[in-house]
Image (cartoon, rainbow, N blue to C red):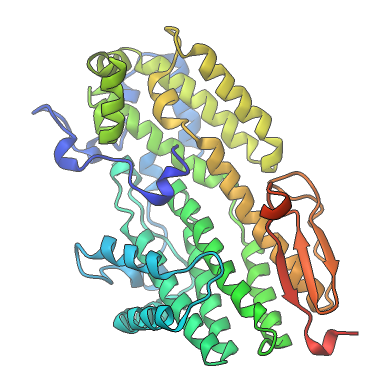
Length: 432
């Protein structure tokens, strides 16, 4: 569901523009799926019963199972001033140099100043991260309108730790940098274990940033020691051992989709689109007819969506590269139907848009973790883990031992000058 776009921006119009009619309901009123439950369509009722057996409805996914005292996420509540979260997030992103995580003196000082400004919050989060479990308490009964501010709060706090690591590297204190990296990985794990596409894909983005910090650390082979690589190997290996099923994010995605159809049935389709998309519909000359048409065909549209999502969710048992053909078939089917009465307006133009890219992001996230574990294991002289095939590409990783380095490649689909590689120094005691 708009998998790539959701990493960077919200999809929705402000609530003030959502309900044009006086009798429109609150998003929370749709959480029980009243429109779907009232449908006479037997196939839809049968599928709804299956989803309920799987605990996959918005109400079921909204159930809180972690006590507040044990919940990491409670330490992130109201951490930053109301109304300031977006500017703080934007500043943290500008200060974070993703490609090489290298700072000139001026850039580093800006990052340190930013970290110091929110150091009280950073230390509070460190205490919260000692709790055993994490539940962001996402209210799936609000659908697209669920409060996901804790996700952005975690991203800010992870970057505060990244800036702490940058300062530690500048001061030749690798142990402090490793400590910050461990905390960044912990926050990524918290996000990745949610049954919601947004935090799951943000977890992938956060791990990309974390690996950028890690690569900057291991480049400093003048200070890196075996014990540091041992710690890092252990923490990334733990990420893999507790890796969530790919299906989790899309079970939550389906629940949000079901919630969206409640808007459609109530004539509120345009609450689900951005202003730019509404303008595009105007240009296409379909704006006035779209909401009415979507409401009239809501049952057939929902059937198509749920049938497709069941295929997608069940396919998650296989690695991503084996799902590619299925996504191509779905796209071809939608293209074939596009100018026919059978085209599912909501599924085709909103809910299934770019969903394949979301799965690719999950696969690359996993591939990065596997490649780093391979690189660290080889550098430490440990047994190489059995990851015979890259889940993104379907091809084996490649690795070579150079004079002082282990280099792992074939991590993504790029090749030539754009190929991404991982380099880890071999600790002195292990160079033979």
